[in-house]
Picture 1 (cartoon, rainbow, N blue to C red):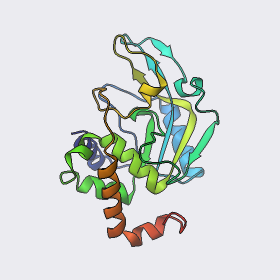
Picture 2: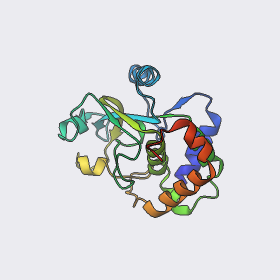
Picture 3: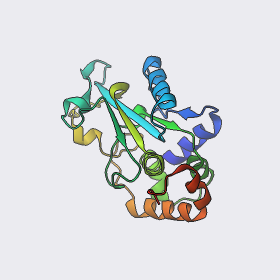
Picture 4: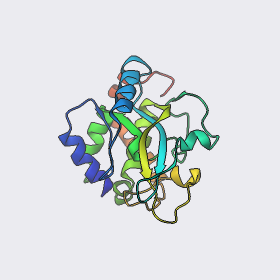
Length: 203
């Protein structure tokens, strides 16, 4: 499952910050370093994301700054505090444009990845991003960190790109109830931990 793949990568990585990439994708080092700098000297959040480029099946550029051009995103840096959006609201571009900070929540989630319900395993990236966002916040940068390759015949649609999808591009129905139940259980088990990293208003 996608969650299993992400968990294995998480276990093998040593850094404090991680970017999960689909097979064959690559990142521009300049943008990664800029994200790290802004994360280390700016807002302390669990995950950051950015605008994306679209490339066609042959690798040619189809569209740059897709989210900025959609009219849905205007600020150069946009903070999205924990619980500012619902679980059903997707506030980030696809997987290759997100940089995660290693946290106790991710440690606990990936440690029990074999035991979570199948629908959460299948929605791995959506689940990881949403849990990170709802327990630490998100920052969006109006710049391009990653590219998304379109299959033949696909439309450059903001709605399509902002929908949760699996590694092969199929759309995922977000398992809202299961995700909320897992987070509630985790919160009950780790209240002392939550008090350390989240302000009283979160609770």
